[in-house]
Image 1: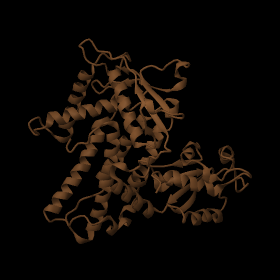
Image 2: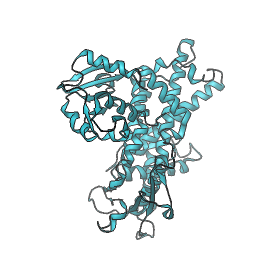
Image 3: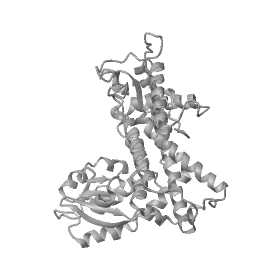
Length: 445
């Protein structure tokens, strides 16, 4: 099964509308990943799905012509509009019944776009089964001898601050190198040593300043930008040690304010706050593009919800899992039945669907997007931070509006079991995304 079913569906949809030119290869020879670069032809949604559709596509034929011709294809219909009537829209729905993810409805969103809605049950089943079966390998392609190869080197001139500690810019550079290595391991690339490079190996140098054009012909430069103060926008004098201590203090104050935690309330509080501080620094440094300047957080200036918000919702997931296990041990609930025995129609509600379709299904696509422009010297780590922040927000809304755990009543137990499987899947994907950044999830915040 394709580890990125969104690419698979995009290709099937494209083939519905186009056919190869005479003498050209079939449209099916297209690399599915290339369909992510077709602009506004296809647009996937993760908000307002009931109104905007699970995704939408351009209705006007000329928007498709340029992209199709570059693939050696032509449109099957020469009409001004794709799917001009109800009959043509029904044909697409009927054709999709043979696909991994069949469609339920095609509607006119506005004059130039159609909204497409999936049948929800097949996607819910696929996502939960895939995430919970594959766990930390969900979205990880199978590497083969034919997989593209990459060699990565860190090039840095270690600098220290006046107090003898590492500069934040060098720390950011080192963390970019570590994140890239984890992403390569998770992606379809094979990492090779310098002596194992071959023709076609992508050579990536992670450094603080781009080589001149003549020097860079044999490799790609992945550049890490400066770290600045929030007001004056000058290079910060904070060392890594000082900034970690500063952000750990911020995390402690947030935990005391939000959760009522007191220094005497937890034996491992110092260790926990250090981990939260380390996570906050990673988010601060990479919530913008790695080549852009990162802004340190002082007195709330330059701060977003960041790591505290992401990890607070990570802790909520862990608390739900722990509470459920405790209720099972106490005899309040029966043990969680196998997934195949769960009534997944319960999760076809709009808020459940947004988590499953809008975020969990799209995680493999996200990882590919992060690595898409590596050959141009761009590794979009900031997209991973944005995904975590948005997933945390979506789960926070879900937590506020849905009662996951209730006192045992026979008629409510199918709902509890279905939602616990969803909680487990969200937790797994969130933890996988955190691990790619080198951030440990937390049990309590």
